[in-house]
View 1 (cartoon, helix red, strand yellow):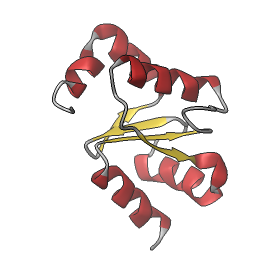
View 2 (cartoon, helix red, strand yellow):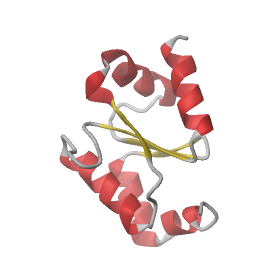
View 3 (cartoon, helix red, strand yellow):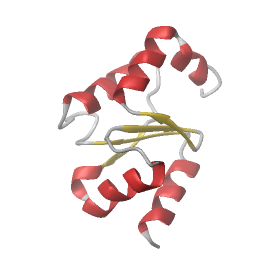
View 4 (cartoon, helix red, strand yellow):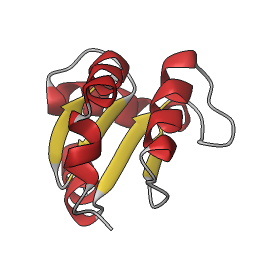
Length: 104
């Protein structure tokens, strides 16, 4: 399975996927920590996370897949939502919480 197929499988088989640096318990950058904290504040506990620092192919592959240059990247129901700034803005406006209303 190539990297694009693996990413496609990950984002389509898990309702909430976060490509991040580090893990939810030990994020390796502030932006990844911010994204995890926002998801937790939304009550999302079933986050499927991918530590891009463990696999250079995934780290580049997710950027190519989304055509988005930075990590973290959030996917909900297979749809690319955005990075840390967009997730923060959506949370502050209440849009992110509405997106998750039907997740549970």
